[in-house]
Image 1 (spheres, rainbow, N blue to C red):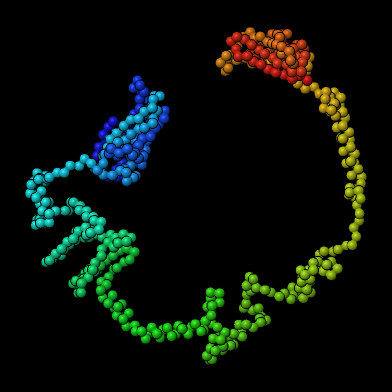
Image 2 (image 1 turned 120 degrees about the vertical axis):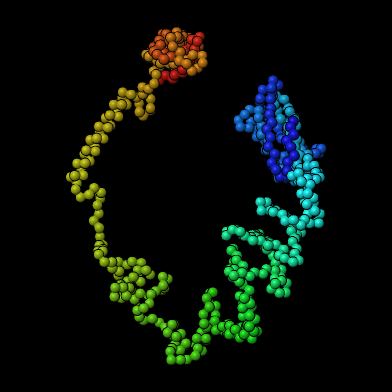
Length: 483
């Protein structure tokens, strides 16, 4: 068990631990068990944020444990914790063990600082600042940072009665005297004004830019006069001006109509349009709705309906096309250029073409080849067997017929090494009989391969099993079916 130390809130705990057998040798866990954390003296444990890595870095018996203290509210400041292994199996034994202890901000001691860097005056000055009595000397923070944070109240309040409360001056061209950044819900700087320019929330007076801002919403000017001008223009617009504009726009409701989302002048508005030297609204309407007789200057839309009265200047062609679309093609009345119809067709009964002599010569060659094929198949059936009954063909090992040079392989007892130089005993089992010695003895060929000449008596059966044995070898058994 080891004490790991006092950790800050939401830090991560890392440590290694080991498992050994009864003799002290490093071993891995047969069953991993569970690594959990107990708080103070409580009996409730948590596995939140716990990572258990077995055989860390491929080292047998060395395990890594990681605990993320930000994973759950179970890990709180001011508490002690114990890391415990439970229900693990190590070297055949069930093991429960305490692996480590740690605490979270529970070992800090209160200190009364009477000196800072050996100076009691420095300690007194810090005390006066936090007690509110103040410190009159300037404090150089040029090489230090000051972070002020507050959840609900003012993080920093600076008051001044005779000079600027905060004065920020930049000493470099690319740096800023003060930089303020807001977030999605709060401004980087919020200022409330008084009743005069000198009491403004922000008062900017410069020879170049009163306020210079770069961002999504920019200000780049001395805006005081600009805002006054805009305000004067807005104030000059009276209610009468607004009513006059509304009276004009109201008239549009009577002169426009909605045509599928597109507004157009109504027919009445066009008819009642004022007359002049040009065409009247009625004339425009009549011109736009007239029947067109001249194609010049017009193009048809892709889905525009067209009445075709001529094709190639011929009205009959248009008529024939209409009849074809309405009733289908009629050869007695409809004509197709380049097509000649006939009422009769010469019957061809032999389906051999018109050259009888050439066709008969080809047929004679085919007949001769068929006769040769038939003769060959008759010969095969006579010599090999009955093709109609599929019997009598000579295949495989023949029954009761001697067979020379029957090969087989022998292996040593390990089943992998070829057995060489061995005297093999050969036996055969015929049908439902018993094993008896073969007529001849096997002879070695090479590399564990042997051969035997089988006599007709060795093959006088339908199903025959051969057994080849030697005391240093694995038994080889082969079964054959005779024909």
